Image 1 (cartoon, rainbow, N blue to C red):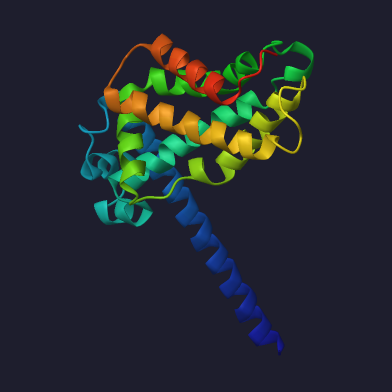
Image 2 (cartoon, rainbow, N blue to C red):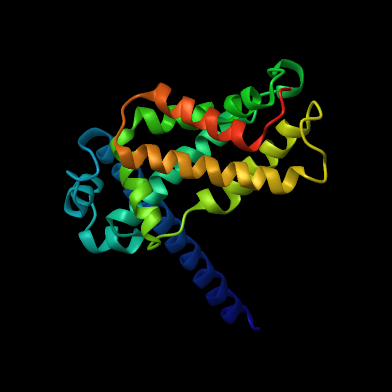
Length: 210
């Protein structure tokens, strides 16, 4: 490659990098605006045109990021991921409850609060995921992280063996997500009802007393 060709190549790479950075910045702005409007106005009352206007972009640009359902999934997934990050500091080994079901309750409490603080968004989110039209990290990397945490919680004081823990933790996670979605679909506004349902569900799977 001669000097001129190398210069053109480097310039093209810089232009491509700048375009990608601009694209990412636009996507982030659209998602931030969508998150704000969904929480302020509600999912049903917010349109793609509203999001585009508030973000200062065209409706086509918003649709390139995702349709309204896809935007909600990405927004809610981000909220769930943030709860995962905040929950990472929980030390069940030194401060956790003695009873296995209570330890599981501590792990999911931040997510319970997220669902109960935003019930309308939670219902819409659950409905979209149940339809199967949009994928969610709730069933991939976020699921894997919480399943590992469940496994650690139920083996901590001998509630489950190391051999049984992976399968039981997966069952706990599936039941946990199902309980969240069922609570959302019923339209209940009672946080204690969701907490009680989860405790009952966990106790049915994890039958130990410690």
